[in-house]
Image (cartoon, rainbow, N blue to C red; front, top):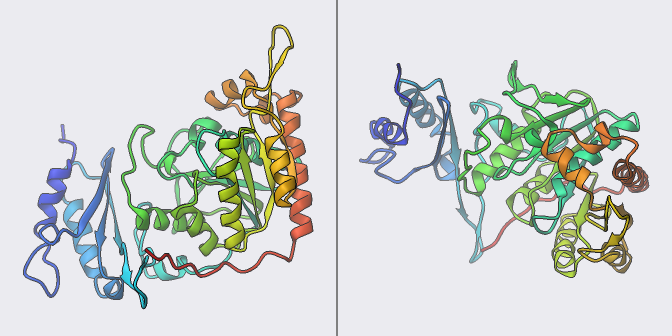
Length: 383
C-alpha cells in the first residue's frame, strides 16, 4: 500500500529546487507556504516578487514536477503569489494573484485576473453580512432557489474559502469534473453551484493568506463553465476583507444584498458592510432581517429573541430598500442542515414565502438599478 504524502516529504522534494539568481533552494529562502494535502492532491504557494512572476513560471513548473514524483501524490497545483509589492507611498499594496489552488496556471493566467464580467452571466449579486452568525449562507441558498422559481437561470458561488457551506446546504457530494480547461459546476435543485468545499474535505482547514484566497475566488468565477445564467448569487464570507474587495475588483457586481439579525450589535456590522459596497460603487439592493421572530410551534406565542424591526428601521435610515424578514423557525435550520433548502422542499411554508418575497423585491431593485452599476474599481490597499 502506497504511503500517503506528507508535508515533510513535500518540503524535502522542494529543497532540491534551486531559486534562479540565488544560492539557496525554495525552502531555504522561505518561499514555500500554505501546503494543503487532501487525498493525494497537493496544493501549495510560492511567494515571489510580482515583477518576476513571468520569468519564474519555470520555477513553478519544476516545483510541481518534483512534488508530483512523490509516491502517493495524484495531482499537484502550485500557485505563484505575491503578498505585497512596494507602492509609491509609505504604505504597501497587494500584488495581483498569480494562480489558483484549483487548476494549473497556464498562459491565460493574467487574463483571468483582469477586471471584467463572467462570460454568459448576466448579473452577479453578492449576498453579504458584516459579521458571522446571522444565517447569511442559508439566506443566500434560499434566495437563489427563490430566484429560480421566477424562471431565472441561477448559479451560486460559495466565496467563503475558509468556511464553505454550500456542499452541506445543497446536499452535494463529490468533486467537480474537468471540462476542457474549466471545471463544471455541481448542480442541485436546478441551481448550478461551485464551492471550495467540493475540492477539499469538510474538516480540512484552509490555512491560506490573502493572495491565495483572491486567486481562488478569481478562478472560481472565471475558470468555471457556468454556461448561460441570468443571475449568479455569490455567498460572501462575513466581514469586509479580501474576498469582498476581490469580488468588487474582478467583476462588475449588479448589486449586493445585506443580511442582518435585528439586534443592534449585528446592525452595526451590517452598516459597515453596506458602506463598504457603496465605497466600491456596488449598488445595494437592500437589507434582509433574518431570525426576525420566533413563533412557538406548540402554543403559537411569538418571541422576538433577537429583537424585531431593527433592519427595517436601519434600511429606512440609510436610504436603501428593505427586502423583507425571515422568521426564526426550526424548519429552516433542519432543512439547511440536511441539505434540503426550505424553498425547494417546503414551498408552501411561511419561510419559503418570505424568501420568495425577498427575491421578488431584489429583482425589482435590480431592474431599477439596471444601467447604474459602475465598472469594477481599481483597488489599492494601503497599510
